[in-house]
Amino acid sequence: MTAAEQSLSLRVVGVHYAYPDGQVALRGVDLMVARGERVALLGPNGAGKTTVVLHLNGILHGGGGTVDVGGLRVDPGDRKRLAEIRSRVGIVFQDPDDQLFLPTVAEDVAFGPANAGLRGTELSTRVDEALAAVGMAEHRDRAPHHLSFGQRRRVAVATVLAMRPEILVLDEPSSNLDPASRRELAEILRSLPVTVLMVTHDLPYALELCPRAVVIDNGSIVADGPTAELLADAPLMARHRLELPFGFDLGRAAAQLAAPAATRDS
Amino acid sequence: MGAGHAHGLYLDRDTAVHRLAPEVKIVALVVFTVAVVITRREVFWAFGAYAVLVIGAAALARVPLRWLLTRSLIELPFVVLALALPFLGQGERVTWLGLSLSVEGLYGGWNILAKGTLGVLASLLLAATTTTRDLVLGLDRLHCPQVLTQIATFMLRYLEVLGDEARRMRIARISRGDDPRFLWQLKGFAAGVGALFLRAFERGERVYLAMLSRGYSGRMPEAWRTDGAATASQWVAAVGVAVVGGAIATAAFVIR
Image (tube, rainbow over all chains, first blue to last red; front, side, top):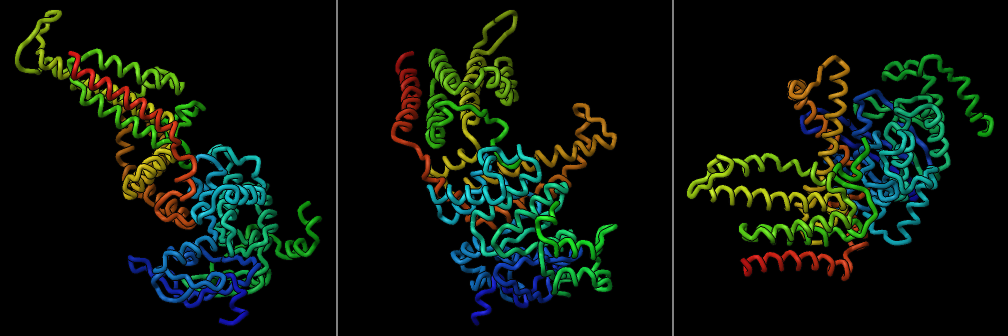
């Protein structure tokens, strides 16, 4: 492995996968993500986005191809290494209720690092750090079900951040959020110094957060480039059932993005 | 909604009983139940003493008696059987208010009623003072086989998931004009049960994947298993209950 490959957060080569019922989900997926990059994974429903995500930490495997996370090969047979991989790949699932299952926010955030063997003050430092990063520190002792949906989504992000992942994988991070929560989450995600892979249908959100986008359709990567360029490529978009929301002006959005952050959020 | 926080029977209080390590409470419950079950049914005072023990613990845990009693209605089917026994029993009979009752059946009915009620009350007390997570942790610390604690964990988790899904489906049904009055809603429910199972199964699968992704390896994190484990004085408290229970049971054998 070359030095350039070692600085990759994620290296997916030739991953194939068919579900047990014979339905083919992935037909050779290749994807490189450099450390610190924020990449959007776009594609219509049923394109294989979630299947790719579940390959990143070895939950799905066996169809051929390789996945490396921060230079470490995902090997489903090696339990110890799998544990390491799972602490490197932080997946935030679409429904925070699937992720939060303990009596208090703090305990839920501690679940991942505690599984990794942390305890005592080290563990509580991690929890405080992760909750502070998503602006939920004052809610640490509340029950997750007493929080609003947007707050639960942020806690779900914290549960994963607490593991100090090499790469943060977000499945539809903006779904079901009201516009204010959506903007708050964007600010949080932008402030995090981690590699991000964001699976989404929300194309404006992808444009806002991810300089680079990858389009997957029918089980393989069909486009990879600067997000603004891909979204402006009308034939490509039409071919893969990607549509910008009604009234969305790509030119204006790009101009807003180019402006300094202070004026952008006003 | 709210993911697996405390279960429906949990009463959130801050008392000595709540703070007691879960494994201690589990051991105390088991010993107490065994003591109750082996006590001879003729020794009425022993059951009175057990009841005092339960009520004392409930008072200590600030669990209202009314709360305990309404929830103990779950034993109703058994009570019906217990009430039927005096009429169905064989052998010597007594007449009471013009009813001919079997002595053997009366004792049998009393036996089920008293022991069942005490067992249910004690279990409810454990449930009221211990969260789901703590229950499972306690079993784990008692070296209960991992397969069992895992099944228990997921059963508790999924029961809640199932309940939530059922509630949502019921609301959706009502919204489309279903008239849910007592038994009649069973029809709609029965029709939805297959869909409910599939939905709950899928959600359960997602919950499990989310746990796996955060390094879940089949047991709760090591740190939680040892942090807050029972101290010697807590064990003494549990042994206290066990000794009192055992003493009552033994005394019941000796003193008639």
